[in-house]
Length: 265
Image 1 (spheres, helix red, strand yellow):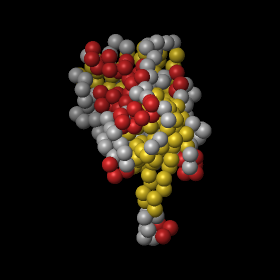
Image 2: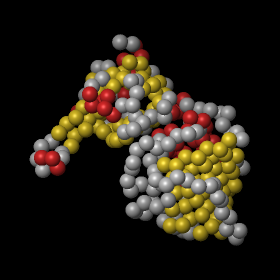
Image 3: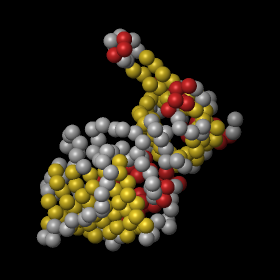
Image 4: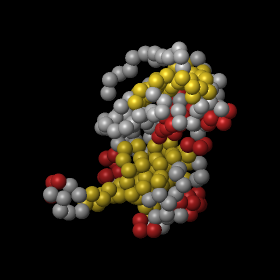
């Protein structure tokens, strides 16, 4: 087995399920925009047509995800444990290659192997955005319902409809230099070009719909999702939280932005 694998296992500091140690949140993105993100002793994964959170552990050269559950099929009497095994065939600080090796893993996989890169090392500085717009719709809870529009100078518009207190209505502000740098960072680490033509494959209930439009390099990207792929989850979260961090004043013009029609979910 390659030395890089041993280094990777030491890096993760995990030897068994009962001894799993927290990992700094690492997001791995595949060439097909699949995702793998570690949170302590859990892993959130998206392999194209299946997404879930599961416990995990490493044994020798294999990543094992665990589904521990009960079911109504036996009136919730018995505990069931399913294992999803992925062989680690290449790994280092920047990249990770996995192959599904048991029946459960192959069932959720949509490709024979997954080649991931740490999202921190995915960057396209050639992406220069002109303007972006995010519309966030309702959920069954208190998800903020809003429209945010930002241009490449940091000029910022908010239309807060619900759960955006104290900013209900039309407001205007400007990102500071650090905020604008952060926005550019998230855009340039979002695999913008690969998102052209992307469509959500999964049906997800009770999550707010997001309609993201980015104008960049004389192109236009439109993404509609109620479960953002991991490569843009940080970008969407940054925009969603931005109205809490930008100095805003009422916008007397009550500016509206029409980004065109979106397909219904």
